[in-house]
Image 1 (cartoon, rainbow, N blue to C red):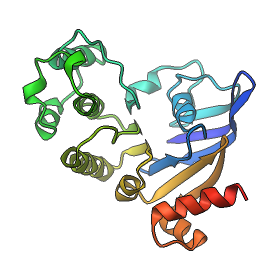
Image 2: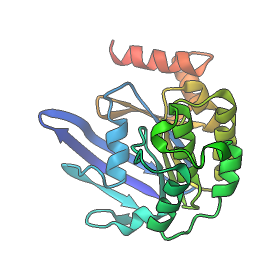
Image 3: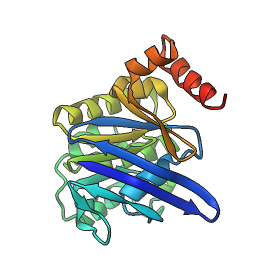
Image 4: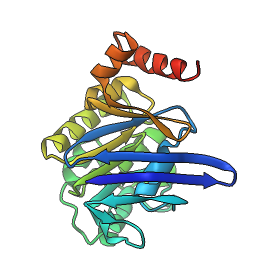
Length: 236
């Protein structure tokens, strides 16, 4: 589904990605982890075509994304920070996104109910709390039925009930054999939704494999301590 080959990206003199190689098969769920500044968001934006790499190749479904754009129609993307037009209401935004993408959404009513957004449909986006805005962000992402999902810090601002709903939503997408990439600083959330991770450090892949194998490698019983141990050993 996704093949990243020898990807390099610099911002000025700062090399953010340093020869990243990553293969993700169709139907796999991966969490891309790492400390701030490790290159997670840059990698995701490169896959989305929002950042142009200095060197390297990205293939989606065996086709290069260079000078292409149609592949994005098969991606549902949840950005870390959603910048919505504040003068629009929630229902106006949903309609606008449906119109832009061709009106192919089929799940918005189900998702609106799931995240209890009915009371907010006529409210302007500028008047919503951060948590409610994130729920709108989730609805806009999952209301389409694309084979590839990219979720950048999806838990931001969510209350416990909405967090449970999000986990169940991701589980249902996994059952449909969708390919899902997730970044998150919540290790408990990552462990709940996937078994496999990629750990980036200073623009390079420092670990790729299962959470259980990482625990064995670091001799830690829980995931958070395993990640902390991995990070500590990387600086030794």
